[in-house]
Length: 334
Image (cartoon, rainbow, N blue to C red; front, side, top):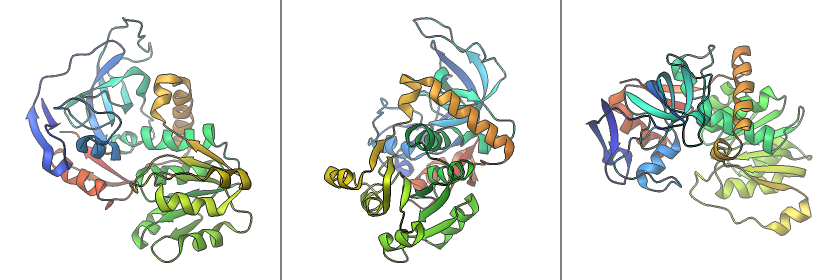
């Protein structure tokens, strides 16, 4: 079968090779699926560069998130149980099992990271539901306890995780302040439902945020950026506010001033969503159930900015890695 393979480490446009590879064998606790659509993620770029915490042996097929059709259910042996609700022919969404990722005709998915595809979403939008939306939902609900009427600040609000956080925040009844970089991205954040948009390229970010959140400050900050975005958040966080640290796309990992957190009485919450699949899968299942219900109601709808053919996957990942994309880029099935 056809698959994109990373044969050496570097930028996707340089190190991806289209190969014919064997159909993967299905180990216990996994399913084999026919890929219907693959949503591209920043970890796909980082894995190609060798900069992600998960470092598959070379060569490997990237693509950490898919919508697919179950072709085979692996055995329930070795202490790993197979979900009895998974059946051949089911349409599913979720994460893939490296090194057999979703940029291929078929891939492997761990049972813990496989969920029923919402009927309300087509394959492209369904493929983009799991990682970004569960990150937003678990971060805002399970970690930060965002309440109706509170003020939420979302950094990088025009990206895949950012637009998800905007929609989840609105579904929870929060006032959402979106931080973006540029006019085009401002339009994307507004379309996702943001109440106020702050363009960090148009002036001083702290001043813009203070105007947006008012004297009471931001109750919750959702930050996948780090660097200057995190620093600005600490200047506008409310009493008993919560900063959810999701990632560091800026390339700069902050060193929090804990004395400042003490004096201002706010919390810094780390979020590694993938750990829930290993340590507490019930949280992920509950999150997916809530998101599916919201999708049925039209409250969440993944923002797919581009659907690209399989052959253009490396170039699409290069745009994602360079920060030139908005919403989600989805690769159609080969």
